Image 1: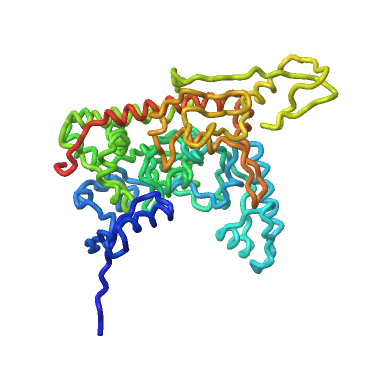
Image 2: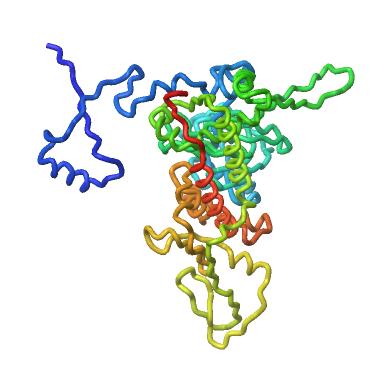
Amino acid sequence: MEHKAEIYYYDIGDYLSREEKLKIIDEFGSMEKLPFTRLIPNEHGDWISKRNDKFGTWIPIDPDKKFNSSAHSFFIVNSRGYETARDFWAYSSSEHKLRQNIDKLITEYYLNLGKTNQSELNFDETKISWSSNLIARALKQKQISKEYRTTKGMYRPFFMQHTIIHDDLINRCGQSKEFFPTEKHKNLLVVVNGVGGTKDYSCFITDEMPDLGMLSASQCFPLYWYETIDPDQSSLFGDHDAQIVKHEAISDFILERAQSKYGNKVQREDIFYYVYGILHSKSYRETFEADLKKMLPRIPLVSDYQKFWDFSKAGRELANLHLNYEKVAAFPDVQVESLKMVHYESSKTIYDYDDGRLMAAESAKKHASSKDDDYDYYAVQQMKFPKKGQKDTIIYNHYHTIKNIPEKAYEYVVNGKSAIEWIMERYAVTTDKKSGITNNPNDWALEHEQPRYIFDLLLSVINVSVQSVDIVNNLPEVDWDKE
């Protein structure tokens, strides 16, 4: 005899420990006394966190078919972020060390050519990083190019790295060639969480190709896309240079819709920034939280003329902050306490065990500072808070402590973490256990001849965060049910 199962559910709360959950059940007396709700799936198969039907009536930002200028969507193309499948090899704060790592990997690859069985390949991860694609090429005896180009990529929010352009060593390039065909061709990308991402919804903007993990399963939406037209080898005029043609990525469809609603003053850039503005709306994110975890965003053209321009202006202001974050001045109320760097020459020395630096000694003699001392003075190992929960202060290194950081600054969250904590986490010296490769963020400061780069970056991002929160808090309120 067939019995249909019924499912009952009680939301006990997020982020609770096992003990806290058991305590809640104990207070009810038994499992049977919990206020369960019977679950019935909707037409999408959602049992909990059900989608909002209104969301599905709006215009998608992604097209059904890419590069169709008349697509009924905001953008005519989108792409996954850059997926290397070997991040520690393919990203580095040092361009010089990146090249060393890639050259080493390519050399080892060629040492493995001629082997016909996967078990014969050298899987020493200090010499090479295999992926399924690279293994397949090796077993088919295919050569890979020894030539490659280095470029910059946004690895994590506010964390720029050097990376490579190489068809064989980058697992999935996405539409990077259409977005950034050369270093001379500029672009802007609005990046959102991909479908099935594990983090709460967020978005970011960048003028470099973002990594797939910059946001959770990054999906990128460009202002432009570029078409590379191969040279005509039969040309009588000997014109054999490839032509690169720039195209708009905001669709004709959405431009016509927006102009018919708000007037011919509206341009594609206005729509691009409108998208960035509305995607920051707190009420939009909260109302459609379940939808944004299961679908790429859908957006209405708001009925209020002024609110369209308010969102577009706010989006432009946020973009200016997030693109030019390195140039933003330090937050004025932050206090910096710094120790003087003292130098000694001596035959006898003792250690400061906090960070291992050689410090004062008997019969020591001071000597003049040098440019190299500036790099030591501002170098980081791992920034930290004085204690758990005390976020108004950051110990930058042995010499510098930053105080009076406003609580508001931590409200600006990207990809599940505040922008400030991204700086603290990513600008730290790390060594990959498998490859043995060390990524030292101080190399970026050294190669760019900016000893204070990381220090000033942290101060700037504090201000970027506060200003971002202020802009988001002033976004117009929208009755989403009526749009």
